Image (cartoon, rainbow, N blue to C red; front, top):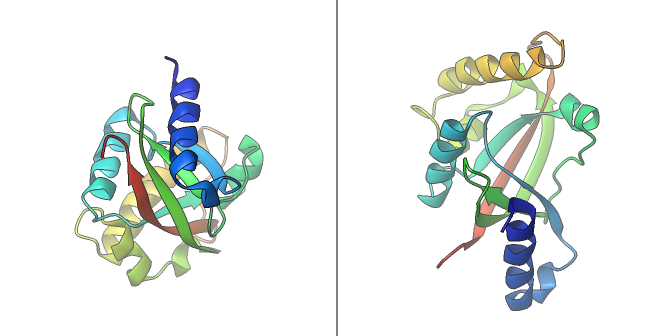
Length: 156
């Protein structure tokens, strides 16, 4: 089965058990920019540590994607593109990178969960991501700060 077919089958199975979510599908995606990072961050989500994620607001339009929305449901993929869980977005805030606060950084669950660590690692990540589109990193760049909860884990 290909990834899109697996995503569709997984989502349809979830909706069958949770019909109230039928019109709340957002997207299917993996964390990060490598299979290793996708798996590491997914493991933090499945362990209940990671309840937030940050993304580059300006790249949504460039990629032709919609910005996440509160109440939206996303299928999380592992590093191989296999659907592993469904999350529900509970809060979305778009703020400049250099104004992201310690509480949100902690919710990301990464490294030592400090704001300093978050800024350091996300500047590296956003720099790599922006370079692919010929854009520089900007500390004032708008960041989508999304908080979520896991609503289903595949196989459980």
